[in-house]
Length: 575
Image (cartoon, rainbow, N blue to C red):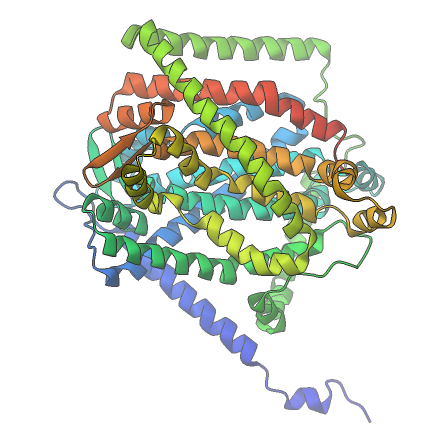
């Protein structure tokens, strides 16, 4: 007679090796977070009591841990901001008019600009504690991560397939159900790849966020970025080499333990009607799937989750139509537009008054000319990056085997902080007499080109396999295949990558147009150099002018060029 549970189940050990590994890994992770987190709240009273950086390589694991913890805290806040901000902007026509241009402006403000404004405030918020400086550093990393993720999520929500939106309406899904069952899943693949790119981009600015030099004040946080800054200042090639090796190990560990499992998990959100595509794999994901503890915890927490879903669904009842228009009518729209124009005009008038009163018209013309030079570098970078990386991204996105092979390599290249090798580039430029005026384009590309690649990969992965198989059956090859299938399929993702790559290039100009090795400094003529020098001196009028001019260039270019491509993606090139 068969019994339940079976005799075999009764004899089976309640926990397997996978559960033991999960338990030990969780305990180790919590202990590490507790150890590193406690050091964020030590006493801080500069200049008497302030952290010091020791170039002994044995300290590098600790410094790398501190930097990595800041990166993940910033990523958590970036994800929360993305889901809220991107959803409101995509679902409210009036909010979109304010939030998307504001996003353009915030993306264009360099990290040093945020640090100039926030460092003193955060330190004052936590007097006598290092937590204030930690918060300023995390906020700076947050500003380097969040805009790319938000643009990706916003664009994904704007291009959700209409038949799925109709299905959500017919099934009378509540706002919460629609958000969790349709909108977030449809945006998940692009969001994951852009989150990986944003996380990698955060490493690019980790040195600026840990070794802070603003308003004639020097602040240093324990971290691998500040370690590199000190090694550069002392021209210590050995310490720099150890730092590069350490960051390489950290990137590979983060990829294997965190990003790779998330990529495998997100693959289930592909819009597929064919099972022909091979799925990505991850040994960590397989381990979690084999363990019983996660499923047991899921069953225990399920009643709480179901109750939360019911409450949120009740608070967001189904709508007969989606709020593409906020609809009080044409008169309300006119009043809203008038109020918006008045606010914008008042802000512009105040800024112009402040700038002209403090620096004068000649300085404004100077920064405009410097902005044109930096714009030229950005445009050259965008053309070259698109030509090189779009075909590579499509090849990776179409071929799961190639993706398994190259995704760690791509993630490593994108995550590796290019400014860590800027000292070697500086030495190369000096010894080969290459002008930094052109060399800075290469340095900017090292930090910005990956947005094009990652979005091309994400866009290619979202093209349904059955559509690609149909193109094969119809004999589409070469340019015809690109024109009929690939370009329309990845266009929306490429536009998102182009916008963020452009903004990233402008932001990267602050560390690419002026580079140093010890006492040697190479300076390119451009707006990035202007802002960096003004920030170091604490020259508020010129900081304001430089940031305002950079914002003007970025927002103007986005409005005249990228916004039109967005509209084309929404109306023509989406599935």
